[in-house]
Image (cartoon, rainbow, N blue to C red; front, side):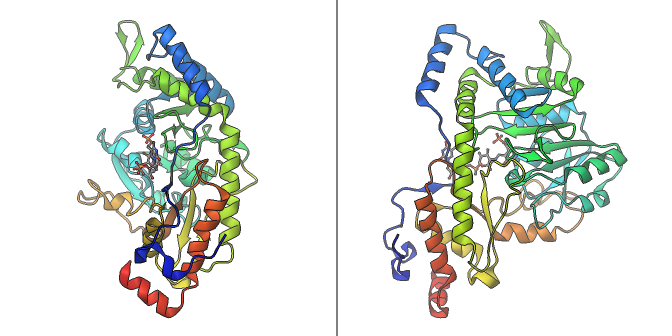
Length: 401
Ligand code: T4K
């Protein structure tokens, strides 16, 4: 692969390095023929939704895969969080990180439960358990940990806090399907964990999500709540919502499940390629995975330290995007800076210094089955070029991006 001359960077108006966009979150696709066969069968059966046979088949397969007692499929990860919160009787205030996708706080705020943002640790980018207790008030009923980038929270410490203060413990495991903690599959921790199977997740059901729990009572409530609260024909036991997954989504989930190992192998290969290519570059810190555990490697995130790399995360992002490398500043600027949390008091009672730093440094890179090792080598060549700029080149670049 040829070295790209500085003069040829697309920010100066030249041809982008890639003639098609490389996305973060480009969907992984399994067998099209298998999907078509499922669709034919759906047609034949005329059973489209409302706990159809494919939903039941996928539920059983996923519960078995995770070794969890109950897995309740729903139509997306946000609804999974909303239902899990209600089924666990969460009210008042709930402590969670700000460093997450807005779906996490919104799922609670939407039902009048106040998100209280706590800081994260520098690594992993998850709720810092040592800063949780200072946020507990008489109104607190739950802690929500987010396994960001699929890297598990410090579950033991969060469990101890929840036990000590009689709080519910939920995990937003939207990124962590297929990952493990101390050898046990994510999905088995806290009162419940939720997954997202959105198109951009490495394992997708078009749109979709799930609640996983080993608590029989919580599971029964959640299953009823996703279907308007029906606990039997003509009998409504709880307030409910329409959270049902339809048969086409379940078909896609089954197709994705058949290719799960392949998707993880590709993600692992891509991660190792980035690791190898970026290892010696100053100021670029690829977030590591603990390879003694199971990982899905679906989010490739690096922290860009401006003083060491010689350019800021945002400058790097603009150069790469001009090259058609659609890197993302997940999750800039942090939920606490978005509405309604920024302008209603009390959501951020304590400063979030680590979050503030991470939201300014984190950059997500393209991966998945639509990205090849050669693509990654080329992306990393551009990054190398940027990190090795002369002071004059640096100055020129800073005037344009
Ligand atoms: N908790 C956490 C921690 C989450 O990250 C999420 C969702 C949730 C809860 C809620 O789960 P869901 O209710 O969504 O099931 C995307 C996803 O929409 C969202 O599911 C995900 N997290 C989040 C991290 O990423 P955006 O706003 O970044 O999506 P968008 O449209 O910019 O797409 C991302 C990239 O993927 C783009 O470069 C385009 C590409 N793409 C996307 C789609 C949908 C494709 O190439 N093909 C496609 O079909 O939120």
